Each structure stands twice: as structure tokens, then as C-alpha cells.
Image (cartoon, rainbow, N blue to C red; front, top):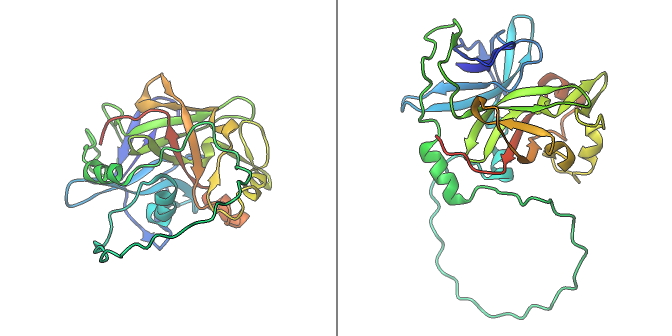
Length: 278
């Protein structure tokens, strides 16, 4: 099933989706998304009663199908970047203690420090991730649809919010899905736009590929601070905003251009203050 926001109103809708096909990277469903609509969460209700986020976004695979990127495809990068990690498959036993032998380390001459972000990265600690795993997905969807017919939810789920970049180079808007008290997943369409044969930042029209060259081989694209400062994050349908302090487009820079056009990218955002909720 999936959620999406009405194009001409602030309502949130829910509907069930029949799965047509799947592979290692994506799911295929009957066409459901409007042109340009990405970032909507696709969920599966597990036997435990929890709602699991299994896919994000929507690309027009054909006139009759919508393709959705599997979250497992970017799970490793998500864990590395912000500490939102899957539960460990097996418990590792601690190795026996090793007798420590004191060694003398020669001082290393100081090197030029790299430029650090204005706002420190607030990656989840291991303890925070454990708490997240215990509570995430427990809040049910109120008045869900029981079939393929869309149904308006009585209220916005507290774990669904909205992100927008507007002004200089058009407007980009998408739903965001809470994955930790301060991290939300959304579509890269919030910050970037395709212009013929290149992707540009909506805020200043500069080339996105030029930013990839600055990543020194990293596959994840760190969104420039100037762009991040102009993202508006609206908590759960409210009119008030919370500042976004960091945004990363996952598994992006090593993809060929035609793949980027086809699937665009998943972006994780970090906000300035934690939000409570499951």
C-alpha cells in the first residue's frame, strides 16, 4: 500500500497496490503515480502488525506500470551516512581480551584541516538505532483503504511530512517519511530538476554533476549547504517549518545519466530538532 498527497489539496490518501513483479532493485505496480510525483512511501504490513517501509518514490516505468526503488537497495548507504541501520543478522561474540603492550607513537605534524560543515552531523548512535528498531512502524494508519480504491485519511500520520524548495529555479515538493526522530526520506526532486541533458539544483541552476566531482569518489551526493538552507520542511502537514541541517542523495554519483533520468534518487534529510513518534 502507499500514501500520497492530493495535487490540489492538503489531504493524504491511502490505497492498496497489487504487486506485478519485483527484482533486486525495484518493485513494479500498476501505474498509480501522476507525472512528477515521487517520494511517496510504499509500505507493507508485516505479520507483527508493524508497517515496514519497503519502497520510495515512483517512476513511470510505462503507461501501465509504476516502478518503485526498494529500500534495501540503499540500506547500506543509509546506515553509513546517518546511522539508520537494519537489525544485525547474527550476534557477534566478543573476542578474548588481548594483553595491551604500551607503544610510543611519534607525533604527526599537523595537516590542513578540511572545511567542516557549519552544523555538526547528528548521525544516530547505536543506542538510538536500537530504540528506533523497537518502535518504528508501530503507529497504525487511521482509516486505511481496504482495496485498490483511494481513501482520504482523517489526519496526516505524524511520521509523514512535506519538503519543498522554491523560488529561483521553479519549485520541487515531495512527501517525506520519518525513519528516526531527526531523519526523513524523500525524493531528490525536492532539490534538483532535469534540464534537457543535465540535472541542476533548483535553487541556483548550477550543475549537479559538478558537485559529484567534488565528492572524491563517494557514491553518496552531499547536497551543498546553500541548497540545504533553502529546503522548507513542514512537520506533518503543519504550516510551521523546522530547519533542515543536512541532506544526502544516496547511491547517486556513480550512476549513468540514463539511470538517473529513469529512477532519479532517494534523499535523506536531517532536521535541526528531534520529533517524537513511532
